[in-house]
Length: 102
Length: 196
Figure 1 (cartoon, chains in turn purple, brown):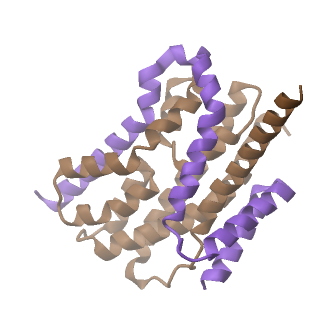
Figure 2 (cartoon, each protein chain N blue to C red):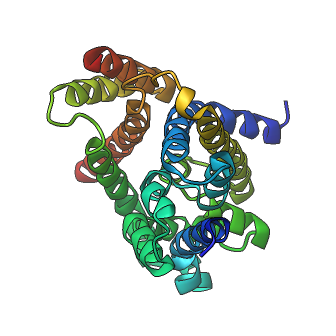
């Protein structure tokens, strides 16, 4: 297959798979969902659970065998608890990590 | 200041940490595609992938299969495997997005990335229209950051100066900050329940 055509197909296939995955709950549940007690109950827990999963998952992309990301993570939590501001905690944690891995 | 403008400004402020993350990660992904792709115009493919799929893991993972002319079925399977988590995100937004205009819904689903999802699920608005306005603004900004990052990175190509090491932590820190708030809210709620 010609390269350009192949690349176009790659873009389309990726988009189609990803968009379908993202749309899946909306298609599968539709209107019933709005007043589903089950979903309201799970929303409380599911969302923090997924975020926690993302934290764990994203650590695999860092230098997770060293202490650096954990120290930076701890600082992020501490700053967030103290200042309640995403900008402060994210910049603080990232700055520490950048210093540590340099 | 009108309420709508206030909400848009808040969405922009919340999107700033993502600018750091998407800007640097998109740039790195673009550089990777430019360095490895056989295509003559890597910036076009990098930008197209960014604006359609809008996914960091995809942008990095697709580089090699794209160059090697891998079969489309193999690519579909790869994308399915690395992107499966996206299917979970919509569940928590079902109620909050029910009944809104179709194109808005499609755009928000289109933009359901890890970071957008994290901010949207943390956002508290009493009225649905406010939440939707916030999310649309947020997604418009982040999609722009990502697409620009990926395109510029590919344009810079091999002539790149080494990206700032450790910058990728911004993304992780965003998740951590959001989780901290959520865990705190859950803990406080639990304590209140126990006390009463």
